Length: 81
Image 1 (tube, rainbow, N blue to C red):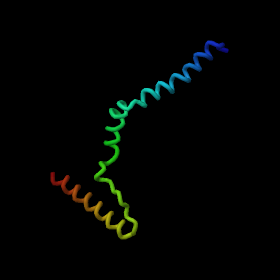
Image 2 (cartoon, helix red, strand yellow):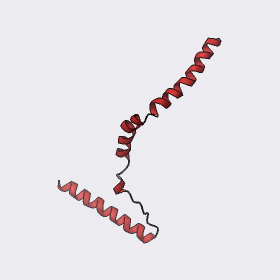
Image 3 (cartoon, rainbow, N blue to C red):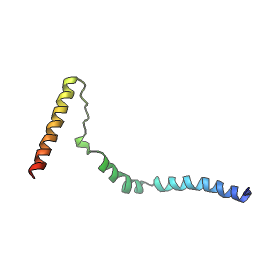
Image 4 (cartoon, rainbow, N blue to C red):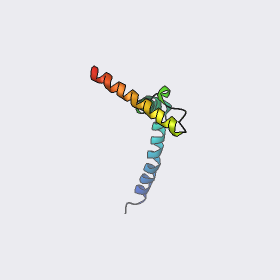
């Protein structure tokens, strides 16, 4: 057994690590530097997101046709370049 000094050290470590992580990762400047740029890479820009989802089957089919047409046009443009 380690004794009371080891137990005090472990208790201090168990308190210190979560608090240090909270202080480091909870800093707003760190969030702005590291999380916001990654979020902008990961998710599409706000103007490209669909805010009103289609509720009827024909509206869904129209939206899928529009997306397919965009993909085909993009692929043809890429082949021509």
